Image (tube, rainbow, N blue to C red; front, side, top):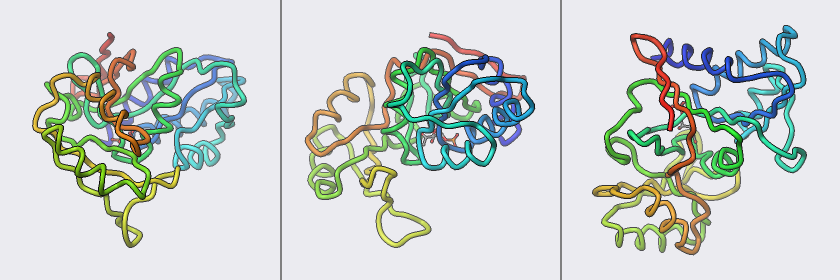
Length: 227
Ligand SMILES: O=C[C@H](O)[C@H](O)[C@H](O)COP(=O)(O)O
């Protein structure tokens, strides 16, 4: 699996040119991309490339690997954003947020000229929600009320608990994460909008209609899916 992730991360470098502002995604697949991008910048193969991190993880990796970082409020436009995903359906709708970075990821990827997604073949599903829950970032005081309200959607929601800290996961923005399992997601765009209408929801991990290209690492090489 690591080999497949490395292969898509290498392929993604072909989309990066001099003078680009690049959204830097979060997770294990994008970590390889940031590492390789840093190498090209350090070797002088790419010039005037700046990264906008979607999380503290991405920021630390960028600094460690020599990718200069800028904030969203310092640029006029984002040329391309590169990120992983937890599930990809046949229409290139995504579930993201296993790493709890979904809000900043969506803020940046929504605004990118091109949103390039990097996955291995295990992430492809017929229907969103088949394997993974939908992460929902919520204001801490509202977590229980929202978890109950989500039952209206024929779903159950669980507060995400941290593994290297006691108590709940706290996001980069200081919020909690609910992981919601839906009986069946028929219309991802509709559900994405409905969830964001619940007061106290900051953002949810359905990314409908925003991915432009998905690179899929398979045992037979990297495949390109386009919308
Ligand atoms: O919050 C985390 C992100 O949405 C990740 O991009 C996603 O979970 C994919 O991560 P990985 O490449 O490690 O599977």
